[in-house]
Length: 134
Image 1 (cartoon, rainbow, N blue to C red):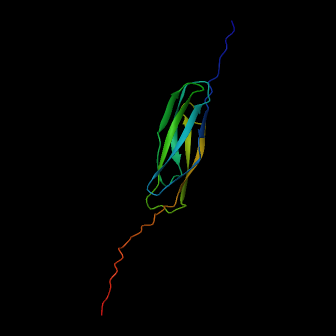
Image 2 (cartoon, rainbow, N blue to C red):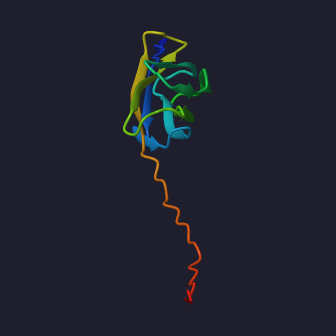
Image 3 (cartoon, one colour):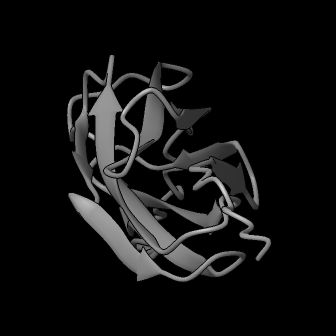
């Protein structure tokens, strides 16, 4: 009798639709990420956000995903209201296999503030003509 034993392989990948976003001070910037289980066994992945200065909202885990499956992840950055135009925050989102924590993948994302455009306001005053008679 011949017995074949398959080894369990854990692996993960993460990709970003875009790695840079811009937004106005006091606003938000959203990123769309895709985590893929590249292993041959079902797995759940922990998600961490590192090196961020601004507030970042993201799930703490994704899965349980079968082999080859993927899950889309929404990451939202809150841009401080006092951020100056051109200021940016570079941070990393990492997914780590719960089956084998040595297997991880990360993506660096940068959010930059845009200048606030202030529209000019015009005030029109009435023109009053007065005739002086001596």
